[in-house]
Length: 98
Ligand code: SF4
Ligand code: SF4
Image (cartoon, rainbow, N blue to C red; front, top):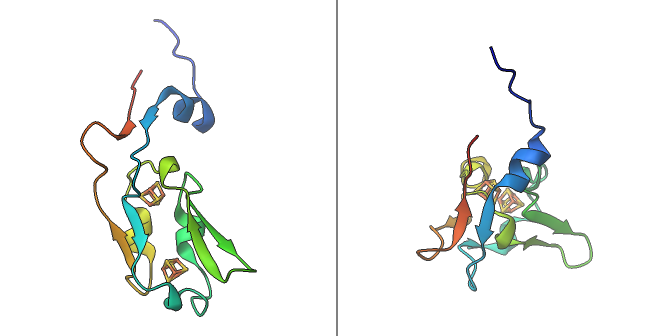
């Protein structure tokens, strides 16, 4: 029986290919909701660190090119202010298996 090497999460992520869309497929529809959102789950649930909170700007910054298209941020936002669309055809994450 052959042994399969176990890959780390980082190794698995590096195996994928992303073609970033020029326009973001993610948006925050009402940024005024974010300062009062205590837990800011969009930041903590995203496995790709797409969202970051700026203390100075009091805004969430979005690095859309990091997105793995899992949908967790949209489900986790308690204010339902995240707009999530599919990236343009041919763009976005391309998962590699094996
Ligand atoms: S979870 Fe929603 S409301 Fe909270 S900081 Fe993120 S985008 Fe804003
Ligand atoms: S869809 Fe998933 S990977 Fe993309 S920004 Fe939301 S939580 Fe992060």
